[in-house]
Length: 278
Image (cartoon, rainbow, N blue to C red; front, side, top):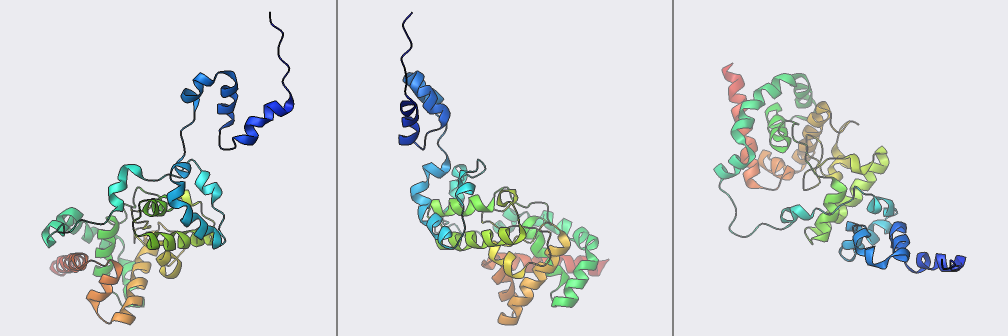
């Protein structure tokens, strides 16, 4: 039997000193059998893979006083690679007709549901109408279109969403500003950002508020309480109404799409007509 070679403490430490980004397990196996390294190498994280693309955003957020290194190293952090197509501007000539737009939103299904939603939440809708001067039918139509009356809160995470937008060079200024607002909100409410659900645009709650709107116009503490979303939609629209003095412009401020405005107005009208016949 060959005598074991003496290995100094420094020799054992050198791999750790010169290769800080390697996993401890990988370094250990590399000393034993270099040929097995590729099989044992851990998957590169999205933080490392996209670092060049997102580093300006990291710098900006850290300049604002937020330490996010632990969030970026968290296993729940990811760049939405499989949904990259969502983070790209629409192609020219792809604007749908109003009927096509309604079909995509499941308009007929929402038309069937809206009366039940109003019945179930009538007291809070009346309260919002009295406080903010916004029609209960408009409030209900918006919540119906935005989140299917609270049944669809999104399958994304807002923190990951804004980093994905930035990584794919899509609405970078919007992503940067909303990420900052998101971190302000989470710090203020002491919320784990990875526990939040959002749309692919980072909108949250049944009212689908982006972080800046959450910070300035959301009413209440519980993000997923429908009473809070009803009041928040009314508050948002009332705030815009003071500026625009026009219902269509008020709704347009909520979602800057003329087809959206028309759809909200039509759904609200259908709901009001259903109640007038009862």
